[in-house]
Length: 142
Image 1 (cartoon, rainbow, N blue to C red):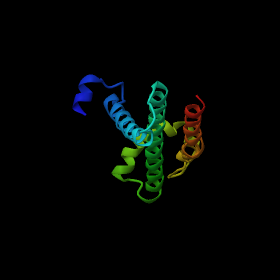
Image 2 (image 1 turned 180 degrees about the horizontal axis):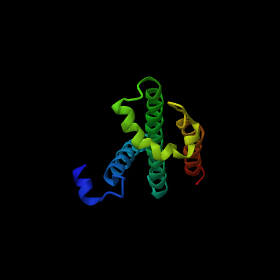
Image 3 (image 1 turned 90 degrees about the horizontal axis):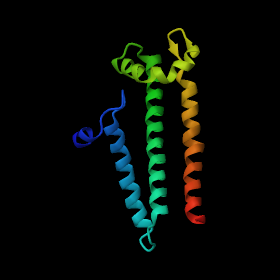
Image 4 (image 1 turned 120 degrees about the vertical axis):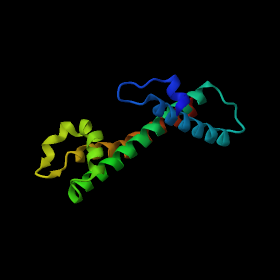
């Protein structure tokens, strides 16, 4: 991470070096997978662009799964251990995301992440497979 941090400065509260590391790891993984599947074919710029797009989709999918897991843990801890250190840390991370749904807080219970979980789940189940299939279709038809 240190070499990337020397090259990429943070963007506000976002650590751009970590984001670039995730994208690079996913790109290398999909590139190795691509070379394994297309060993007999010529690799052109269209395949490289498709590989980059699939890399971005997989990185976004990993981000959605991380958010999904963190929100689920946050909701569980708000029921069982409302004064946990982990809950306070998760609150600092997720309050900007759940602020529009703050009307779903009832007493000590926080249901504001429910809408966000539904949106993330719909992206994971419908949007990402659709995008991946469109990229595959673009590769086949071009």
